[in-house]
Length: 516
Image 1 (cartoon, rainbow, N blue to C red):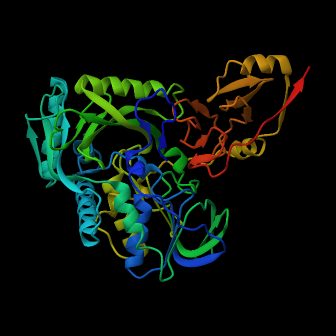
Image 2 (image 1 turned 90 degrees about the vertical axis):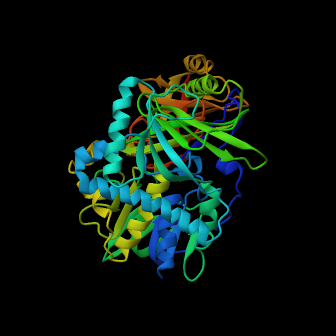
Image 3 (image 1 turned 90 degrees about the horizontal axis):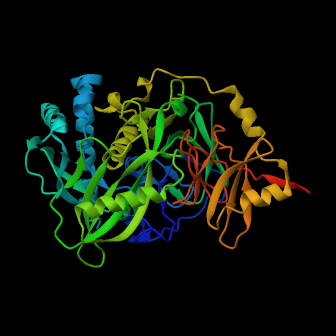
């Protein structure tokens, strides 16, 4: 899930604007075993939309969330709702052919329309607003790419055009513009939609972590930390699937983090949602502020999860970039987000894997989860009900042919995690003395790696840095105060508690036995 920035030296409130300006939820924990038609695991836009559409079709549904709903990836999004995904349509046509590229375009347009329809039908005050979307070139070299994207999008029937006019105050060399796209407040939308789920045999259970899935006799058993749910179907919308061996999802995606600032500027923001065409990503949109006026949200500074320790520097560079565009600005909020990106940039939506026809998955939305997450709900609701869906083929997870075996050494490494380590006491004190309060570091002691965090009062917390998903070594993230896995994106808080799947188990404690 996305995380707030916790460092006081960073500008603005360390919180997602969407979470800061929407009510807390208080759905109960699961307290006994149960049975429904469908169990949906994950309370973001894909999970809530899937559960909502299934219940509306007459099925009983349980929505499970390990934390509180809409506080994961969806709570930290930029919340653009668009079919214009930077530069993608020329690539899709070349990679898949026009027919599947058409499915992708039509699906995303339908996702936008579904959000608009539900917001209108249920009178949801979520600041939904139609906007043109721009992908702009920042150099003459990128101009041809943008023009080709406009041609490709237009060939698929999208309302696209090439334009020289981009009102954003940055250097531009033309843009592809897609009319009638949208933006909204995602939590205000989804919390009201989720409110229609409980009742008539359907439930939402928060603070209930799914730990495993078993398939037996045409039924699916979802084992949680608070009981077992039995259903005919299960849906994994946990951002990264927690049940990922079937289909080899551990080899299908990469985890990416990016950063957001919500600004106040002293001039009107231009009408539209914007992203640059190539080079380091910078994305822009505005949002009506709760108090008065508007905020401007800029995102960027992407990097692979777990590959960077000084994540504060990414916030600082994004702030410097924002200042270069709007010199007179103040930062109201800052936050970061995590996304999973597939090899071909198209999400996986459909049956989990061959031979697992009662388990469905929606994952790999990249940076475009609002329209695509809604599309996932529409496709999965159709498939579970045995109905054909016109866009399912392009998103089918079965298109991924390379399926490596789960490494046999992983289970042994996980079983040996934790335990005790004997160290020279004086050396350990000297090594950890350089870790300031509120910071962490992975050190090597007696040939073993140890993750050490020093809390505010100065006490040390020692963990085994072995990620409990597939035994990679976590690294420290100094902006979010978390331990991040560079392999598949699992994340843990400073004390080792899981905050981001695919791991469902906390880091193991490491006991230090001092010599001397």
